[in-house]
Length: 245
Length: 378
Image 1: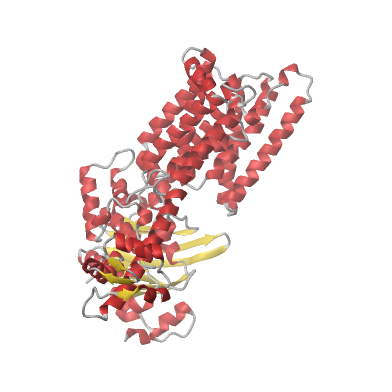
Image 2: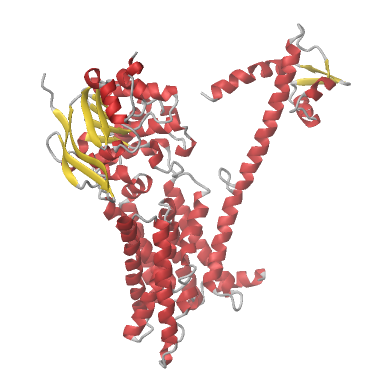
């Protein structure tokens, strides 16, 4: 079956100062996959997501979401940043953070209404955090903070989800909660793109994978391309997929 | 300062025109800087205010050199222009050179301030009789406030309040998570410039009263104090405005009831008292209650450990309330006379002579300690 292309990246190059972080990336992400982006530290995994979302300005290249520029498809995309990218001592509650997921569809100036609050509460329940809705966010554990971020993205009710290391430093409960939600999203036909570090869990969690190390090494179904050869090309050392057993 | 003076001041404030003007001015100034200061503090741009106020100095001097007049509005316009230039240079440096923002802030601050001082000394050497008094902008002089100045402050504060309410959602979003704000399609540059412009405006308005050197304290102190009392952004901004306004009023009152106390520094000192008080006495974040909680937790833990140890000993007997020698506990680290006393008070333990025995409640509590622990940690 020929699938629609959810995200298409053409000739994308991003650099900080003189050093290219991403070099000439071409990437097509089909609709409905649960995709891991893997690669060593400094491979540009987060940068790739940020460039797709317009947070970083690329030197060259273009990105399209279902055939149109990102700016035209804002409502279709949700983003879960790295947990460490914000100050969790910010004076606000868990519910309040999740409510931020509704801001995009509200647009400028308009305030969230009752139905937005309801959506936020539902998202909190989905990630198992309803009991913590009034909690100050600094008083949540790392895993709980991650689930709050996930809930915020769920509220956006998007078609494509980008997540930057959602499993980093979380406990087993949170990891299971998150992966179940990701699989549910896929079942609902959504596309989920995850920057992932733990190679062990790639075959178990994901059905699509992109190997990245400044350049794109490979992209495709996990069962076809998640092998020694690509791992070695990406990580530079001799990798043995003993992990697949 | 005696009590009389202050009460006298508060009687005079409603009748005396000058006093009323100055008090209103400092109160409004305190409110608007406190409000905006909350944003600066939460954005971790505490130094920005300092840089902006120092960057305003050359603007004042240049405005005087060009017009030759000491009209407040003209001079403050100059301050506004050079303050804005300084701000955008800071942004530019951070964007273009990848220097850290504290470096950029420090650089611009000293560069502009140095240049401003140079111009001030140059002006002072001029034969122009009009030049005296420009240096009041260094530390401010609230006594020079007139009604039109206060009106100006009130208008800016009203405008600021309006914009704050209008873009509240966007401000909060940007403060918490700028990248996410971008992905939702908001123009973060616009929001950022809006906040920063108002901060610059508030600072410039305060230069006449508090001065270049101390102005940043007006921005930071009320916000830092307010942060201690609340976990809600709205409450924090509101509290900061209140703290700022009160600092203004009390500062003016104290300096008015004393001779030779310059208003600006006194306002800043009053604001610092708010900060100090908040740091120590805030229930959730204050040092005092933190320490008390810490000591209480340790005591509880000590108690639990002793009880658990007793439980361990008591378990070996069929009769849980079988008496044991107190000496047995001496080998145990957490044990003290007072913990034993507390356990008796709680009815967990009975003491007869040199022997102790667990009560039924005590035994059950001890048995449940571990299971409770594990559910607490979820």
